[in-house]
Length: 391
Image (cartoon, rainbow, N blue to C red):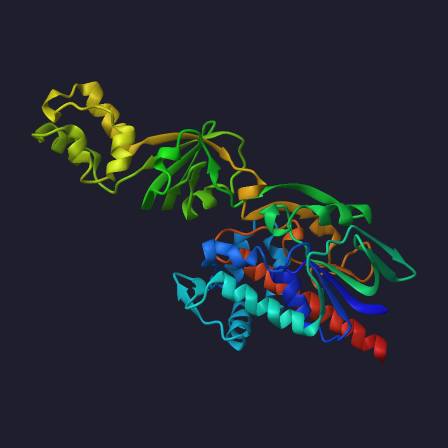
C-alpha cells in the first residue's frame, strides 16, 4: 500500500501535523509510545506559549527567529489556545506565559496523542532505521517492515531527553539524504557541579545570579533549585542559553542589604550561624557555615566568609549533558528548509518541523509554540499539495 503521508515522530509538532492533515492515509511512527517528552515538559506544568507581541516574539529565537514568521502567522498563540480549548484543555496567563490551568503535561499529551491516533495508522515503539526516495515515493524501513509514502515529515526531535525517544537518529536520516546538520548541543539545560548532594531539594526564589565566563559577566534573577548533580530552575535554564564549557556561578541568596546583615552580626548575642538561620534554611547554613563561634568572637575574616556565603555563594559549573537538557541547539540547517512551507529545499515532498531544525527558543513557552506552529504549517502545505494533485 502507498500512503499519502508518513509522519516520523509523535512529539508536539508531529502530532500537530497528523491532527491537521486531511488525508485518511497517514501513518505515524514513534520510537517510543508517543508524546513522551511533552508529557514531562516543565516538570508536568509546561509553558504552552508566550503572549509577547508579534514582532518581539522572534527575538526569543536567536539568531534564527525570523524563520518562524510564516509559521506563527499561520498558527498563532491565540490559534494554539483555541486548539487546546477544543480538546478541553484550559490555560491561563501568568506574566505573558500561557500555562496549563487545571491540567498536567501528561493529561495534555494524552489528549493530543489520542486525537492524532484517531486520524492515523499509529506505530508506537517503531523507529525508522532507514529512508530513501525512489521514483517520487519515499521508502521507509523499520526493523520489521518497509512502508511507502508520497510525503514524509521528519518531526523526530533533537537529542535532549534521549530516554523519551529524541536520540539523534533523525539527524543521521536527514544527513544521509543530503541535508546539513548544524552540530547539536544541549540548550535549556541545568548546570552540573560537584558537592551539591547535601543541598539537594533546597530552592530559592527570585535570587540574583551572576555567571562568570572568563572575563564576561552575565546577570539574571529568578528561581533556582539545588539537585544531587548541581543546580537547576528557570533562572539556570535561562543562563544555559549562553555558550561556555566551564564557568563560575555566583548567587546572592537573600534579598537583604549586606551592610545591614553585617551590622546585625556585630550586634548579635548568640552563635553567628543561629542568626543566619533566620534568613536561610538550617540545612544550608549547617552545610556551608561551619563556625560555631558566637558573633562577638568573630574575626574580620570570619565575618567576610559568612557574608561571602550569603551574598556571593560561588559554584564551579558546566552544562549538563543531553540526558538532562530540555532543548537541543543545532539540527537541520534552516538554509535548506523553506520557511513558507516547511518543505526541504533539497528533496521535494520532504518536510521538517519542530526541534529537529536548527532553531531554539528561550524558556517561557517559545519552543512549544514553534513546534505547534511549524507542525500546523507543514500540514497546511501538504493538504494543499494533495488537493492540487487530485484536480
